[in-house]
Image (cartoon, rainbow, N blue to C red):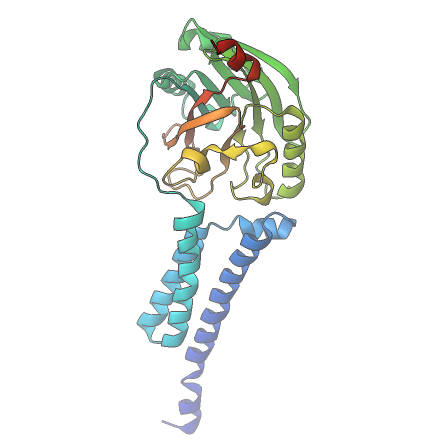
Length: 323
């Protein structure tokens, strides 16, 4: 072997190691930037949308391949350590693991589901909603051609319906659309529902999905509406991860139903392998949370949220109930 051939032999391996190092460092750095800055800027918001689970799996696969190829064992161990960070994040921060709650019978049950524009079939979809028999159901992406009163009659004689543009609401009792709000490319409306435990106010919302729209201003607008309306419940497709800065430290003591009483894998989109928790349910201090679950169906690309709760009596009701 000539000296030229001997010197040229190791070069591809060194370049491959450098490429591995740059790729692993770049992916981990972008993910870290997203976790720190979240949606503060448009570009950091894009980094924040990188699913922690996929980032961890990618880095773990890269470390395993590097170890098998015997490129650089120290590099393999370093990449493995980087892979552990997002995976631990998934297991301890992004998801919660609690024992199953005992189901109660004295609760109100709310259902929210982005129904994917009915692509799974409207008849099958409404049959499933009827089987769930929730006290109030909020469905996102319902086309304007759907006859909501007819659907309400199919759900049961005690149901009424209401439309907030692409959002349909069905409930036992009376419904009133108090007002709608302006959100760029989005939907938001205040709905008053008089149900089995008295009147409740809901803010139903659907934020735009395009990643070209910065999340920060949209969530700032949402918080303005939240402070103005101060509803009992907020539910909808936010197209924004639950851990976004604009959805943390909420005003007025609002909390996420999943964080309060939920458990298990919290991502809601896209099925069949969801990686983003973009459908949210929030509640005020006037609500006592009991149970929050997520279910999947082939009829939509979103998982369905179900929230069981009790309405706490206000001061006047508490005084009237006193002997």
